[in-house]
Length: 259
Image (cartoon, rainbow, N blue to C red):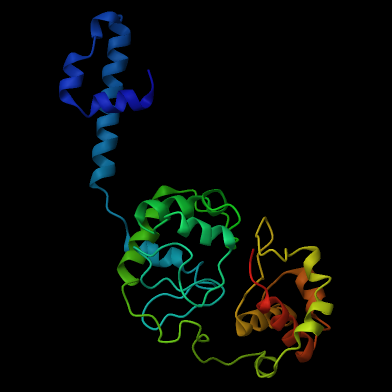
């Protein structure tokens, strides 16, 4: 007997009463009844538990490097999440979505608790070809908590300019950010980058760097260059890059439309 059949019977008194216990031995009947009671208890506990918004806020800290949320949120490496619930996937103006995400939206994918749960569990399975490099959140409790937090904070009004830069901060790459990068020079410099990062924008094990906002891209390279971010390969790649080179790379990769 499958778990789902047992659970259905355990939660339905009439079904329990009509279940053909006489077909089984006394020992088997005892085991079936114990399963009924155990499953009923699990169902009651699950139903009674409520998501923990505070725990969800704590879990969301891992998402903040890409997604802004709350009053005046703007697009960054990932789209802002204000107004997320009820939004058609891939539809936020000003953000460069993958063609896979846009296709999902065109086919009717709407963000709600159910679809977000499936996406957060395994993003690349739910939307094959997504630009989001996050591998997934395996624990249902964690997903419920973060979804509850998002429901609590995403009703705020986004920034008037959804493509606005992040809030003012002391920038180690400020000089490069002030430059107008040469796209052609950036393409020339990109040959080593694309040995790992796909120009299509896919994130199959390696994070996508296609379509990033200029400042976010430059900030990330300077953080590798100055060892704020620890990654030996990226540190080796950026250590000899100057402002002009980094601005050019940001201009080139930012100019590409994800596929």
